[in-house]
Image 1: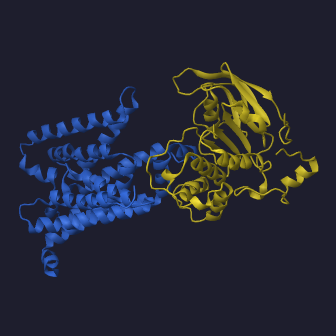
Image 2 (image 1 turned 45 degrees about the vertical axis):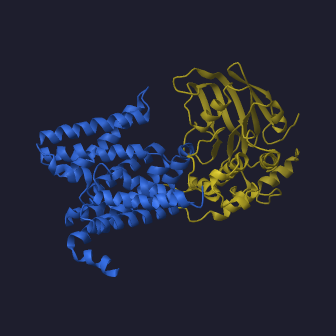
Image 3 (image 1 turned 30 degrees about the horizontal axis):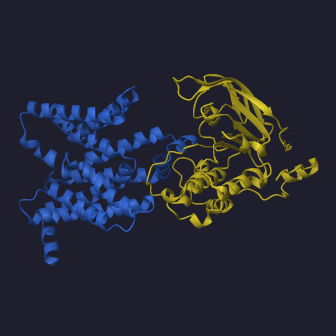
Amino acid sequence: MLEVIREPLAEAFFVRALWAVVLGGLTCACLGAYVVLRRMAFVSTALTHSILPGVVGAMLLGLSPYVGALAAALLTAAGAAWLSNRKGTSEDSAIGVMLSVMFAAGIAMMQLAHSWRDFTGLLFGSVVSVGPQDIVIIAVTAFVVLVSLRILHKEMELASFDEEYARLLGAKPALLRAILLGLVALGAVACVRLVGALLTTALFVIPAATGVLLGRTLPQVMGWAVACALLGGIGGLYLSYYLAWMPSGAAIVLCCALPYLAVRIFAPRR
Amino acid sequence: MSLHFPAWLQRLNDSPLELLPTLPYSSGGKTHCQGIAVQATDLSASARPDGHLAFEHATFEIPCGCRAALIGPNGSGKSTVLRALAGLIKPREGKVQVLGSPPALGRSQVAYLSQRPTFTENFPLQLRRLVQMGTYAHHGWFEECHHGNQTVDRALELMGLTNLADRPVHTLSGGQLQRGLLARATVQGAEILLLDEPYAALDQASRDIVEKFLFEQGHAFTVIMATHDPADSRRFDRILEMRNGTVTTTHSCTGHGHHHA
């Protein structure tokens, strides 16, 4: 049994993937608690999907893919906010518009770049090809996100629970929402290598949805979400290591969903 | 219970030697509010920026320590008055001063309780944490509140909620939640309570606790309470009646003295 765990650890690529999954899972699970509680799953999907045109565009322009991805994600968030501030457009249809426009632009640009195959890693994840430089980016992002969430904990909790009271106390809920969207964009961009642009939203939603079923306070929700993300992430990596046909991104998402299902079925509360 | 204090007793009450129990937040039982708490001149406002005027040319004043009832039928603009005083909506015309300055967000001295609070459903939050949110008013950005637990305990006790402190907020009844929100307002250190139909969700037991809190705590704060039921206004010092889009003061107190009909 121990041998099963130890064997892949001899491979450098596997250890790097493990680091990426642990740091990325931690980041996304903590952010995910807010995403799930504030019902922002759809906007997180839009942000993660818009990474595709960002990366392809950056490649066409010769920029760093991370810069392009972040710019595209922020553009999506800003576009959705701008559209939904106009009369007659609800927020979810504004997000729907931005999501499909950005994704369509990404597909068009992929054709322009004459390469579909190069982008499968982007769409479906390629955690085993994570390089040392990617680990540094994920680690820095995790640090920035976790420190921001810690510093703004009470304001973010208040604004997420009772927006009007947050306004009354002068805590600027609109600003906090923008900060949260920015952090989600940052987390999504850093973690896109783990499971791919199409599935990154699962890292935000599934562990946190599990946490919400188990936790009685926000820190407890985050704690359970992190546990679920680590279990799923590490479990998924081992699964795809031993099952040659299993893509790592899909394995991670499926392994995250197992604790969710188990808790959903056997949850003591609610 | 109506209290008629002779002037010398009132002064004693305002001094550090208080006779009445102090509120959790109040610094020595004293209110900082002096003179006029709320003064509106020719005020007009609408519930939505582009909506029709809920009331116009309202002129009224409420002295510090006064309990004022805002009465009128549904849709007469009571909520709009309170929201304007809280700084949640900008008046269209006229002037309004709350504690000597125009209404603004971010003032801990003013607490507003909405008629229908909109909380995020199923949010993992215990009642104690809800009440503790009132202390955020005294902690700026980037600060975590490590103290203030004693204040929170006393506010919970005042509202008869000590046993429910660890209950998730979404499992509380309407009346328990309403008391929790009042406890939060006291922890916040509010000197003016703007209450929008606070009795709506209360059973008799909850209502007794709330009334005791509102009417039997000396002059610790100014209350402005909206209610559609004229019977609720019996114990108030001043009645502002909203009718045909404007506000008339029908019954006045002199501020620090309590006069009852």
